[in-house]
Amino acid sequence: MKLTDALRGEHAVLYDLFAHLDEAIRTRDDGTHLRGAVAVLARLLVAHARIEEELLFPRLEPHLGRAGPLAVMRDEHSKIDQLLDAAGTETEVAALKELLSQLLQLARSHFSKEESVLFDMAERFIGADALTEMGAHWATARNVALGGQGCLATH
Ligand SMILES: [Fe+2]
Ligand SMILES: [Fe+2]
Image 1 (cartoon, rainbow, N blue to C red):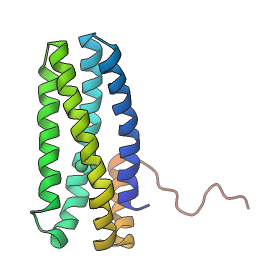
Image 2 (image 1 turned 120 degrees about the vertical axis):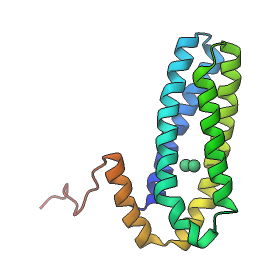
Image 3 (image 1 turned 30 degrees about the vertical axis):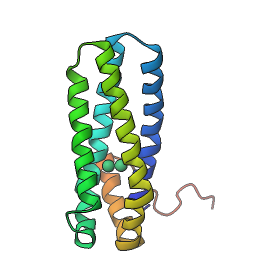
Image 4 (image 1 turned 90 degrees about the vertical axis):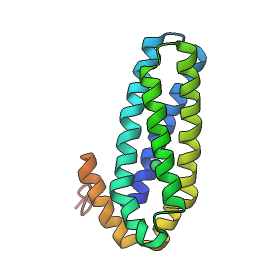
């Protein structure tokens, strides 16, 4: 499996969490519940961004340079981190909801740029074989077993 496929799959799971948070913003006024949801979001988003920064961005750098799309992606990761930190310490519910809304808007637009531009560039510049090898590193980092030779096949 290509690394870009794995990252798109992680986005899919995170979109579901974003939808849960949209609902919590609309329906919950309980700060403890909202802060719990922020803690889960922070853990998953930070781990996802770390995988991109460690496995993908360095391999794109020779093709794209440090400026341009990679600078934009890194800058958005750090803005997301700042919003997560601010949300993690905000005690007032209305302000926390406002921070969360900004965070979800930024994360969705960031993911959309990665899916429509960056991952496509990775597939063109890095190529399927190298991305598949990088997918194996992703699986190790994420503790996911990759099936080798069709172990469910009937004989
Ligand atoms: Fe990202
Ligand atoms: Fe991403």
